Image 1 (cartoon, protein in one colour):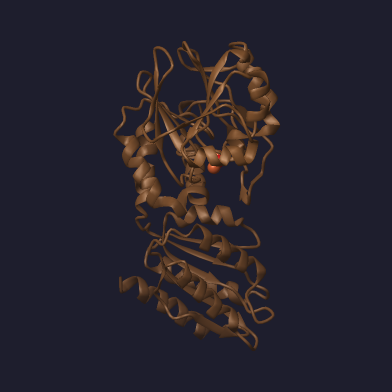
Image 2 (image 1 turned 90 degrees about the vertical axis):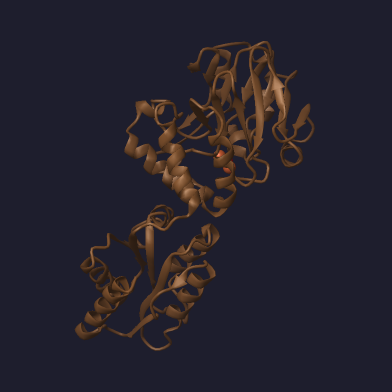
Length: 391
Ligand code: FEO
């Protein structure tokens, strides 16, 4: 369990979670890391810890550099337990450490989780001298909890960004230039869409603050450390936080006897006929967190469900519930569709949920009883093509 040098005297001492496949409902198909960093200076400082089940891994990596008992400060940028969970174990081997946390939310959260320790609550932009280096604590509330802050070290030009700029991605490479760029950006987008998106306004404020700092390295708490693509991830965050509409059409549905599926294909044909890049997802086959990732690049969203027991299918209900929770009130153009036998309530319910997400309904809901005829499908294709033309 060796530490990895990030810069002279600054080490990655985190943990790699190769096996995790679900992070509170978000599928982590490529695993995850919990990054923690050790700074060797007059005051030995640990930035964040790891999930509690990886405490031994963290302590072993710290021990490969110094005796953990010498740790003076532990900066807790974020209370969530993937970063603070190992605090009790670390405090056993570093009993003289002071835990630095944001005031008042970090203090409140850590006390609730772990009880009394020696805490130091810091105010926004407060600095801490640790010898030849300074640490500045910049609040980033709601990215991703109220307590969040990032820690900036101007002498090293390192931003310890915690959840911001993260990706759930387990790998041998610790740095962005050691792993495939397209994959880490895809994972960064998935992370943004599934964790940060509802707090895009707060994230935009945070990005504006940190982009004015002189940053050479973003030492995020999840995934690879950014050193060669700092500009790329800043630019991506500027785009994502702006909630600009994408260009694609996203069609998301489930079907019982293929009628709603036929409508989905007719809608796809309409968008494709006008050159709109279209993605179609059957909720039986694709996880909602992967579909959520694609929302960022969408301009149009069509959601379909047949009617089952006077409501929508549970898969569609789950997707809409997740979508509403993560909705950033950006202005997607959306509409509902589906087949039914007699009641037909599902389509109106889908439409109401899309309205609740803050989306603009751009097409009357499409309701087809039993099996859609060729004429009905052609009319749907034509209506969708006209919708694109009318933009
Ligand atoms: Fe990576 Fe909000 O915890």
